[in-house]
Image 1 (cartoon, rainbow, N blue to C red):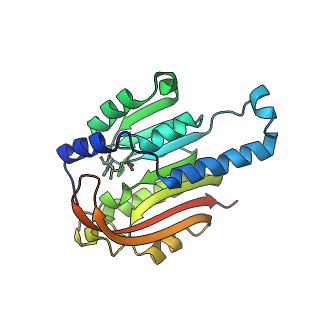
Image 2: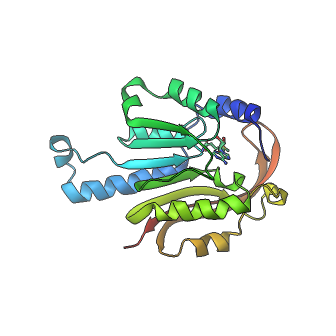
Image 3: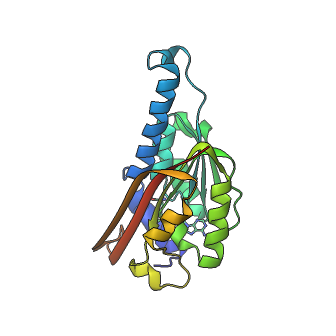
Length: 214
Ligand SMILES: C[S@@+](CC[C@H](N)C(=O)[O-])C[C@H]1O[C@@H](n2cnc3c(N)ncnc32)[C@H](O)[C@@H]1O
């Protein structure tokens, strides 16, 4: 499933108005509950908490980035494709743009700043193993105690697992890599269905939301 720029531009056109993935929605909700518990729901209007900060890796057309912005977050959105920037800049609501920074850079080299949430939906598997593992380490290093990692990965039964330029880990290995986190949401699904662009594909999707322990 390795893809070129034209493929991704088509993908963005199809997905730009799609809703955010449940992983990012779950993560947003967990932080909202924590913030409300800290100040009380009635105190929010009088003394709103500082904006939380998320890094959305492989943001694509920005379905998750926009959900975060609408929920009151500040977002650094990262993708290798210049079309991600143009799509996202056009799609994001004007009053939210001030809270969005877009960086066009390869995930294999990007510095991941300390943040409340690293979100990575369907992007890390597109790194070859030699780049995947150091990138994973940089992500983990950016997530301090109480911060979260939300991700959607391809498992080792995914059709893409035969592509040496991609990394599709067995679910058990993903769990092992999350040592030091409380896994708050975990789902593994395997089925045959079309991709967003209508191509048949055998999916093995591993998704999680995990909170870094202190
Ligand atoms: C399947 S799309 C997912 C986009 C978005 N997260 C979503 O869920 O709609 C994968 C995205 O990862 C980006 N991507 C893949 N490999 C990348 C890399 N090495 N560096 C940066 N972005 C990459 C692609 O450009 C694409 O936008």
